[in-house]
Length: 87
Image 1: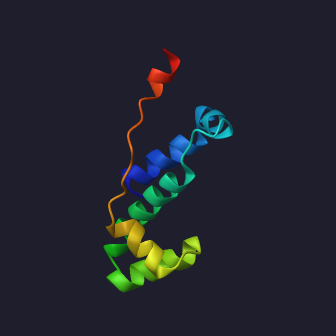
Image 2: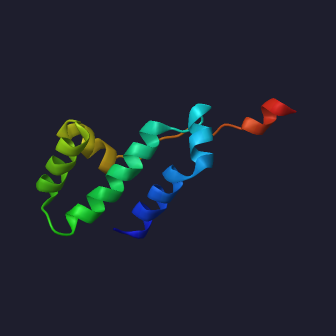
């Protein structure tokens, strides 16, 4: 398992993560996509591009097109200034 996978595993098992999750402050889709990208890089070292996407498609119950989009498209995020709401 690579370093990022270990970091994700440690993060999710942290009690602070559970609290943030219960408050709705965790982007589950973003976290899932990070895991998919990490797994893709690991699998791709020994499998073809198609096989890697197919494996992840089956593992996460997503279409191959969805996995392809997650792995190869950049995610566009809108920055928010959350602290300005508290002033």
